[in-house]
Image 1 (cartoon, rainbow, N blue to C red):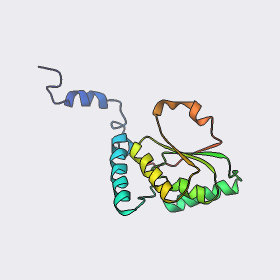
Image 2 (image 1 turned 30 degrees about the horizontal axis):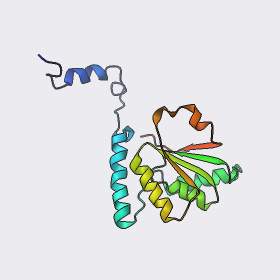
Image 3 (image 1 turned 135 degrees about the horizontal axis):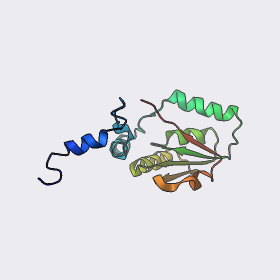
Image 4 (image 1 turned 90 degrees about the horizontal axis):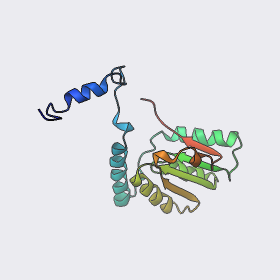
Length: 155
């Protein structure tokens, strides 16, 4: 019998032993780069065809609450701010509209970065930097920013 002749079932069962799935947690597609690449490919195409910027994944209320927190804590408008997982860049646009001038968005989806760039260009903003995230950048990346923002969900 050749390797993999069982359809991978035995190997999959072995790899699940001691995994999160065994503990009652099921892996989510939301944690995969493939999922987000597909999402942002669709959103990029929709933006190009209709001008729709797409979803505010964490909600407009959360975005506004975070900006108010930054203002309350007197984060200087010229502080370097990093938006981790920037997606469509809508949060960056809002930061720029509130006067923040040294902002960078990173994402591991090249389509998200392209969509962000298109939206930022449409808004006429030029002070926003975008970078494709490489997971092994390490601590060195974050040491060059005063604040780093990463908004995520727990499902």
